[in-house]
Amino acid sequence: MDLTLLTASALSRGIKKREYSSREVTQAFLDRIEKTEPAVGSFITVTGERALKRAAEVDGKLARGE
Image: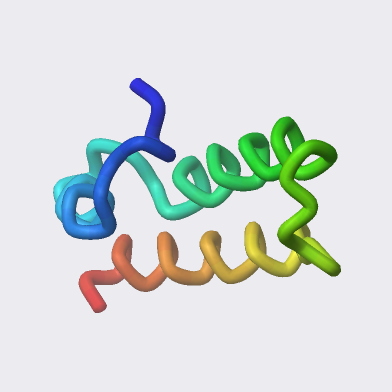
């Protein structure tokens, strides 16, 4: 499944149901950015490591029931 094709609502539901993690969703979008950015040119800076760190924090909170 291509997570980048899902709506924000579908992604939110899937994360809450643990069908996929925040980190998986973030990585899917980072992969898409890497693949398409040379042709699109819509980003000045992509902070992938920062985004993955934040996604891991969200996954940790969900695991703790927050």
